[in-house]
Length: 146
Image (cartoon, rainbow, N blue to C red; front, side, top):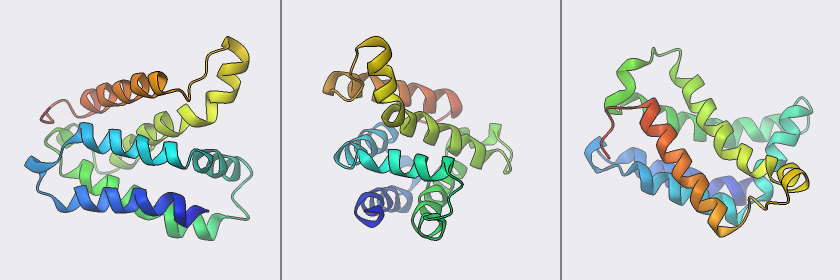
């Protein structure tokens, strides 16, 4: 399950990380990442559940599959024009914050629906969430090209 879900995310990030900064389209990266996670919507919930449970069962697999995702994202963040505002120690925390916003959309959806009657997993809500993610990334890396 992890390999099928995370594999496409790794491939996507690897594809964009290999490009020179000028050829990276942050909007496309975010939109395609959201699209991949939508196809594997159980994956963010599985990873969060395991994280909350201490990671005993999946820690070895998570290290193998998730660590490269964070590594690729970190490489991309470090080479972005706006990265200068963050220290090397802060970059992983910035990546974790974006990850939590992205994954939180999936993991919070059932509770949000129960509380507000709104399904966060609809097309229109994903469009809104993708826009929010774009704005967050632009705010975190303000010198990044649009």
